[in-house]
Picture 1 (cartoon, rainbow, N blue to C red):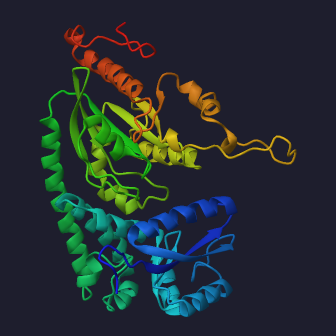
Picture 2 (picture 1 turned 120 degrees about the horizontal axis):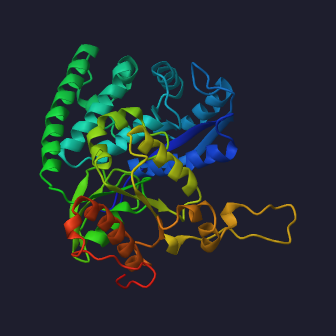
Picture 3 (picture 1 turned 90 degrees about the vertical axis):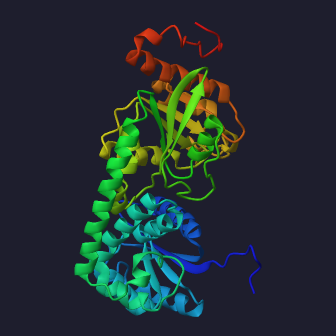
Length: 407
């Protein structure tokens, strides 16, 4: 019998491949992230399986020998779901399910499933539902057979559960309806954005779970939901913030992730409009994460896709209180010094130095360097504001960021 606050996690296994595009180290990084995604969705990872392959098997993604090992483990340990790190084709998913006789979920649907859990407003739920239907459409024949079991758990939320009898025509009609519904809401949101006046708009962007919502709470002194799980924030939150008498709008947006499903980028386009229409981006980075440089590259790639890569940007390196360089033994001649061994001061002298004043190191939870951060944001917003309203120059004087005094 479960205690009141105890959660029953679904037993899961993770499956990934090693190839020319992702070596063993990169494959483990992706599986680490997949494990966090699984935990966020309500699963507990019992074991990981990886295989070196030039390219995925077109029928079963991994080789038949490796799949047999997975099948044995699934059977012997009562595993509820097998989660693959890459998107499976409808045929692969169907074939693997026949062999493993358990739920088969790929990274794309796992992310969609988390979004389905996290969507709070009607708007977010509509966006997620649209993405789910677009994912399900080519998979109808394969998915309906296992959805008939009416089981809960990972990958089982959403339209599939209650509409087993749905055929392609009905799903297409549903997709069309949802798109129309989103168009209507988009128009309403565009009007809302227009009604916000000429205040400077600042958007928080960054990888998922880097502390954007925590930072939003500290700056705006408001209670935005923040949690140490992936995709804690789905709904866009806009707050009016005032720093040293200067008002501006601050938006918290959905976090990005590597291999973000295209269905989500499409259906969340209007949420990303907040980023497109921002005057300034605060790109928040979790510097304590070993792969933070990869995270920056992933965010920049998505910003490029939505035509926002050239916007004025402040790089905000968060969680400096949690940053710990890997120990390095100078006596070990075989070990070459890597970026993972750098101290924060050494990082500041790397490519970060070339960004000039557009970089700040903070801890949102501990409020370390927080006044410096507020001052930097104030000066940057002020520059945009007085370009728009030159006659307000005397109202909002410039401050020296080193001394904190008026210039």
